[in-house]
Image (cartoon, rainbow, N blue to C red):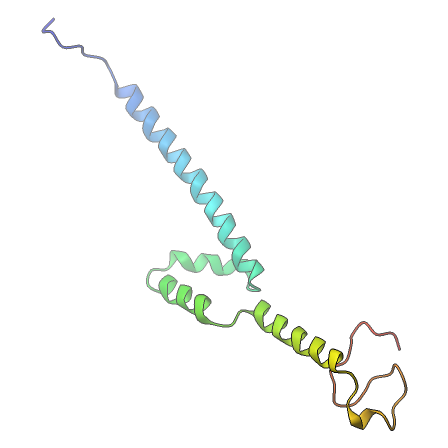
Amino acid sequence: MNGTNSYDLSGWGVGAIVGVSLLGLAIWIIFLIAYIKIISKAGYSGWWVLIMFVPIVNVIMLLVFAYKEWPVQRELKELRAWADQIRRGPGPQQFGGGAPGGPQPGGPQNPYQQR
């Protein structure tokens, strides 16, 4: 022997590459699922996640998603406006006519109200 320990590490090299590759794939799948959930909760289709595989377009769409009003935000704004109008009560034009509990002209209609 020449004083150095020589071990055959070729098996470890392949095993390490496979292990790191599997770990990377698992992490990538976890992040892909997280992106799909975030996009879905924002009100968009989960299929938009596929745009991240298109170079340059993915950066543009990221900026569009970041700065555009999300469908969820638009719906929340509409519901808050509807709730504010309900809190204010009936307007002066509604005192003279109209059936009580029926749809009132000029205001948002409650889709869950029984007729």
